[in-house]
Image (tube, rainbow, N blue to C red; front, top):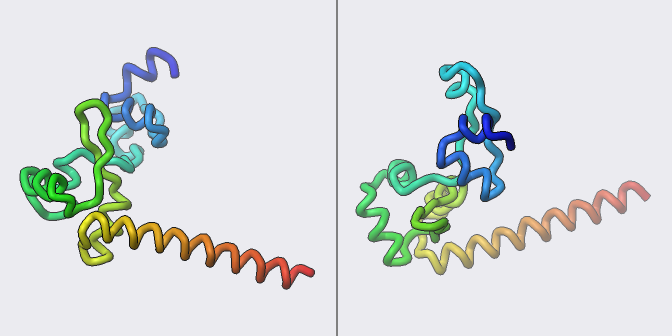
Length: 126
């Protein structure tokens, strides 16, 4: 990434870039930049609290108690995956340990389902 491109990115964009999260290319016009910008996959505490409908203080208490999905810590910054928070909410807001178990079960089910679909497809192709 060139120095000019780095200058156009915010600190949060740089963090997403370091984590491998795709970032939209900066535009010349500020209004265009906002319109075409990709939504971040990882969000800060304020945005995570807004997604869950709680205050930032409550979000931090829930995180410390292990009641919400784990955050990712980069330096002093704690980030949450939007996708994980939405899935957690969809599953009825279970405690972190139960959510991680459900998440791994769901992932295993998806892999098994995909493998069965591929096997079925191979049978049809023969």
